[in-house]
Amino acid sequence: MFDLLCKELRLAVHPSLFVFIFLGALVLVPAYPYGMVFFFAMLGIFQSIMYARETRDIYFTALLPVRKRDAVKSKLLLASFAQLTQLLLSLPFAFLRTLYMPEGNPAGIEANATYYGFGLMIFGVFNLVFFTRFFKTAYKAGAAFLTALLPAMAGIFAMEAAVHFPGMEWLDSTSPDQLIRQLPILLAGIIIYAGTWLLTYKAASKQFEKVDL
Amino acid sequence: MNALRIEKLTKKYPQFTLDEVSFTLERGRIMGLIGKNGAGKTTALKSILNLVSPDSGTIEILGLPNPEQELECKQKLGAVLGGIDFYRDKKLTAITDVTRRFYRHWDEAACRRYLDEFAIDPGKRVRELSAGMRVKYLIALALSHHAELFIFDEPTSGLDPVSRDELLSIFRALTADGTRSILYSTHITSDLEKCADDITYIKDGRVLASAEKGTFLRSFQHLRTPEDTAPLTLEDIMVRTERREFHV
Image (tube, rainbow over all chains, first blue to last red; front, side, top):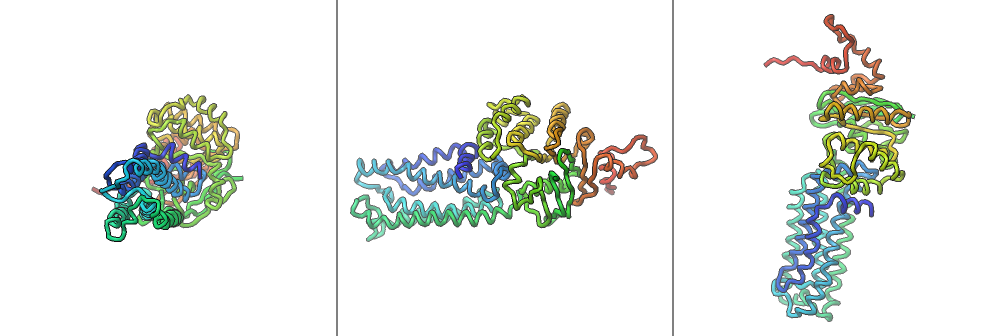
């Protein structure tokens, strides 16, 4: 597993992905729809898949002594690396923001436990749609990205809109006493992300097994 | 033990069928796979490499069933696919470092030795190598993990005569000790006259003939005409077998 991720990071990844990962720091911006941070991670993954297609990475991988489905695992590992690193990297910036700008984000949701929970769910759905669709052909990345973007962006808009509904203010809180209400959302995010990862691996591998390179 | 045994390999596409292809490559030998463009050479090679899933048939690599023992088979395979260049912007050191992680019997000293032997600078990027050097680099990688079966799809296409001759020398050296074998497709039939031990001819998805080179050449001499003063070459055989009349 480590070798596959190493192959991705040393050979297959597009350098712009690291910039998109670092955009997790955008949670420090005083007024910004933080849901866009997730969009940037998805965009970075899409670009890397496009780059890998152009550099014939899929052929290189398929010729290595690995199973065909390991090519799928390899890409999923890269996606998870980007998504989880972005979220982890954003954490210190989210703390800084709460400490030094306690007045809140007027543009949308705060970078709180709810935000990270929704983020994991959105990433999970994106991965499921994008990789399952992409590995039907292993080259039609654009169509797969647009298809996956629909539910992912719907999730981002839903998250950003939810905090404006009356009675839902607790979703937007950075107060420690609301954390206990938000933690189940974070937990659900972790479970959904892990579940969709496994489902994506299984479904996309099944598609890819049928593809003739 | 055979290096490769293919039995009734079949792959159906809407417009084309690779139809019950069978041949055997013995250890220590070089087999040339010939046929015109679209005859099914690449499909056959890709099936052996598991890049294409055949509909039916048996593939045995160094005595191991493929794809049932895919990982073990791939540990012993080296492949060069013509026209497919990996990671053009990456340095060879990066590609070598990643490749070595996947092979159990990677031999670092051998890798350095072969790169040196082929005069390949590991600090260069793929795009800075000539087409011939790229093939040599992939051969060096395969030799570094002690590959025993080499599969080349059009490895000499687009190369100048000197580079082609160098590669053919490497092919002969590879198989000299009788442990390594080569299967390669080409339509530069003069290369095969120089270095192949066996020839397999695929026409319209079917094996027309597969035999030791001398036997193969003799079996097609019935195509000679009274005007021919010398025995037919592989090119003559292919051209006369594939020749079509056009009415335009």
